[in-house]
Length: 365
Image 1 (cartoon, one colour):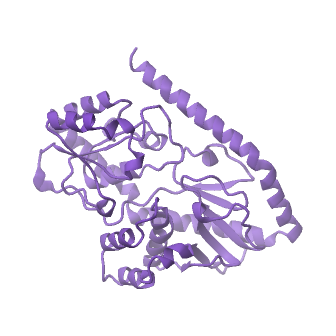
Image 2 (cartoon, rainbow, N blue to C red):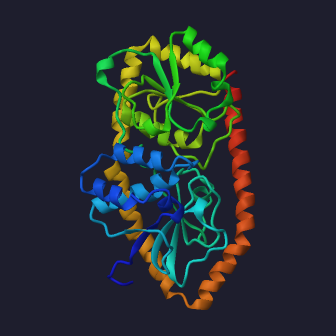
Image 3 (cartoon, rainbow, N blue to C red):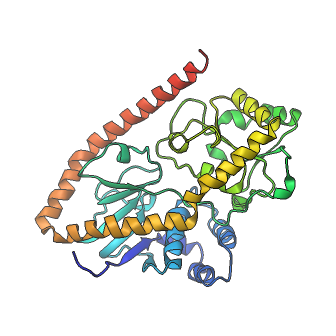
């Protein structure tokens, strides 16, 4: 292996650059301490309102900025280089794109499907099938989500108040039962204020007393989704009431981490428990402060550096060491294994649904 570090690139698609000609200026302002991360987030939302996902910000812009802040050599590019290590967002990459004989693809899978020709995938859930089904052929790595950029914690001046409930995320991802007028009126009758926070203000937890985040009540485990809503709640100092997703379950060490629910009725019961027990709420807040230490930006950035130096760099030099016919055989083996991977992924999803359905049933025994 060479002692010289290979170049590292974060690929940000041209469509993102085209939405605003101020990207380089705004990123430089942040790196030079002229604006806050919350300012950068609001700029991102204002200039890219059509994006259905903020994965480009979370998985390309944020790690790039954090690594640069730690003096780690990397570059943000709008074209895919032919040489070096390239971190790419799966949703914006064609299925048939192959790395050159001098290039290592690190594919950010997030909640998309695998990319057959990428040498490494990064996933955002430790229960993703690419992590669970270990394979010598598929090189994969788990790195947790960064916290919401510029996160503003709950204002301690609110004391023991327990009234304002919020969902942070795209409204399309809320369980249908939690979007009805009946649900809103029921919470209002019980003395709660319910809000779906505007995307531009996802960082502002200052007036929030509890977070509710449930995608569905149908026992799906969502093995490709991250635990970011839990991480943000810990850091914000607010209790979280969450669905039965595998990313949350993988993080759960005690009943103080969050409250898991499988029905709207259980949400109401959890809210009443928290409202009548301020000591429990305080214990959950204190526990969250401890748990949030492992998700702080500097800690996640260190995981990125460890991944690049200890996994991506060696894989890059292995790739360079393969003769061209060896690289062609590698691509051929990926073609032959993808169908099997999809079958295994479906099996995993079915298994997760059965597991959560059984857990739900056992609660009633």
